[in-house]
Image 1 (tube, rainbow, N blue to C red):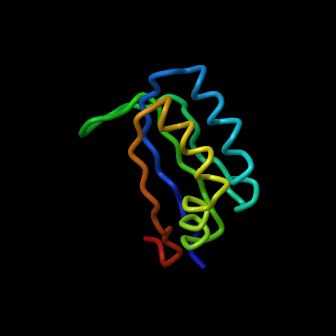
Image 2: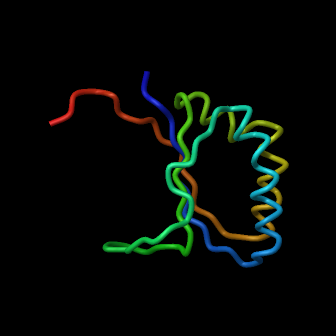
Length: 100
């Protein structure tokens, strides 16, 4: 079964308030089996626009990734994020087929 991923690009406007979001999202991420593959770190925008922070979070499946986003646990954390940042977030299904 293909995994699910959140891909987020974030511009933080209030670093202290954003820390509260980071602490609050742990409950949902733990419950839904999330695993950070990218959490900040260096990047180079080689095409298009970018934001200052990038995140890739892996979930056991696409359905679990969607369920986590709409969960009561994440909704509480999301309210903190929205007050401290602007984000572009998408949920995408991974690929587990043949590789070249």
